[in-house]
Image 1 (cartoon, protein in one colour):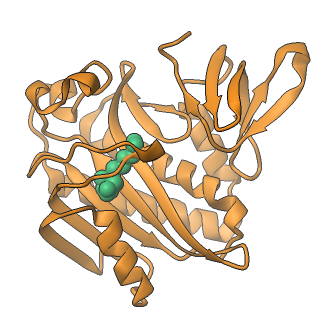
Image 2: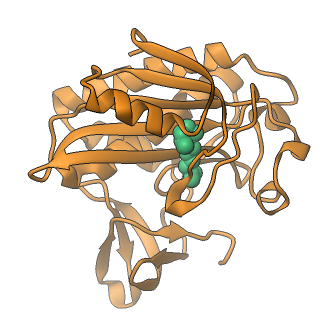
Length: 247
Ligand code: BTN
């Protein structure tokens, strides 16, 4: 990874730029980085604040040879890669909020967004969008985000070198992805679970089909969250929003 890198000043979203390259046949590991995005996207249709020069706004292309159903595994892999890389550079203690938000003291420092293209239920490619709030200041955040987010600079009390962080993230990503391709999801699953802030705590999940209350107990083989419901029955959740603030 990191051999084919495109750096842009301003783009709408690095996701869109990389998707286009992917359709044109760009190789796995292709990376698009922008200084600024004016239509940065987040999960669940939200927007993502991406001011110029203050963060890492980038998208990485993967072409895994796995069924579409296994996409959640890659989501968790991305979280572990970012977690390990950022911990190494900053020394911060970083927890993962399911599926892939990285938090310091309950506040979000990064966001990950996977967008995939598939054919016959197999993945053609995945665009892994990563947003790391590196050197933002409190005043860079819109009011509604400020209470829930923090930058690495605010958390560490010093400015950080974006290039060093990018290099560590790519290295960590490449290593974990090699493990994943060679021996499957198990190692990633264990690394993820060890960093989770949600496991074994009463939790409220908002899914497309309604609200679930239960206790997340672990990650399934496919990368879904296993939630223990009242009466000890288990439910597997593929997509939802956790609100640790609610409970
Ligand atoms: C989230 O937590 O909601 C995910 C945020 C993902 C943001 C990154 S920044 C680079 C890439 N381009 C985008 O438009 N979004 C992702």
